[in-house]
Amino acid sequence: MKAVRFDHYGDAEVLNVVEVPRPRAAPGRVVVDVVDAAINLGEAAIRNGALRDRFPATFPSGEGSDLAGVVAEPGDGVNDVAVGDEVIGWSDERSSHAEAVSLPADQVVPKPSGVPWEAAASLYVAGTTAWAAVKSVGLKPGEVVAISGAAGGVGSIAIQLARNLGATVIGIAGRANSGWLESMGTRPVVYGEDLADRLRAAAPEGIDAFIDCFGSGYVDLAVDELGVPPGRVETIIDWEAGARRGAHADGMSSVDDVGSVISHLASLIERGQLKIPVAATFALRDVRQAYELLEQRHTRGKIVLIIRSAVGLAGPESRPKWLETTIVSPPN
Image 1: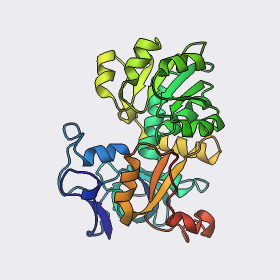
Image 2 (image 1 turned 90 degrees about the horizontal axis):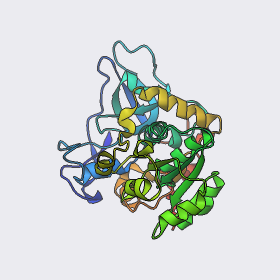
Image 3 (image 1 turned 60 degrees about the vertical axis):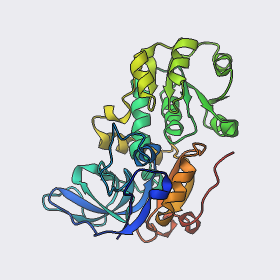
Image 4 (image 1 turned 120 degrees about the horizontal axis):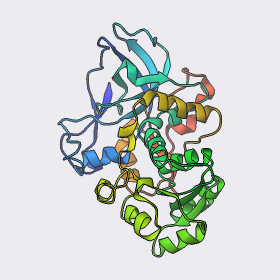
């Protein structure tokens, strides 16, 4: 089968799609044929060595955490899933960017039929991180929360979860995303110089909590310029500032039951209470281009690798034919 590998730190050019042995299902594990797999900025940071102290790579390294697919082989002792089951899975072994993956049986949950494959494949890293971030700041109905990177993979989910809790959401993003943020029931504020003044103008009643999905000084801005208590600030990326200011910086590591959170998010999608915007889709062979686009940090929502056609798995209407090959341009 084909899988992504890299054998030294570097930019996206170090990624290669190579032939590797297909996994077999060991006891307590399942093999899943991957349909879609999302990509994440954290994976890029592991690949380029920025996180080598926290998450070192062992070469040659696989890649990828998120996936959705179809169970191909359950191992001995696995009774909760069967061949042909559609599942949402997650890998802690950097292995989802491949045509098939072996996972512990407790790292898959059923994929509801009403959840599109590309959305299902985006729920592990971005979904659980957004859920944990919103939970950590303790939002109550009627409170105001500002979210930086509001149109990105995590932010685009966090703004909706916060709205579902009855909070007023201020979304910080580029000007090209203002209309989309408004359509999501969010007050858009464009990042840049004098941002604190624009945030105060957007929330004259004050800002109760802040979720930083971008880094680059937002924790200090929240505490020093907006007066948000550090205990109500969450950063998913600026761990140094979080520790220095006493803000939350746990992210998805604070999620005790990943499967329950993913199942909850999937149910919200099926009920129309959560949308996963997809900025672009790429074939597995184009994984380098997918990461090059992601690392520009201007895409709206998720970028997803389309690894196998869903036609024949959930009916021919499950994915439009064009989605397998089209790259959707990001907003300017």
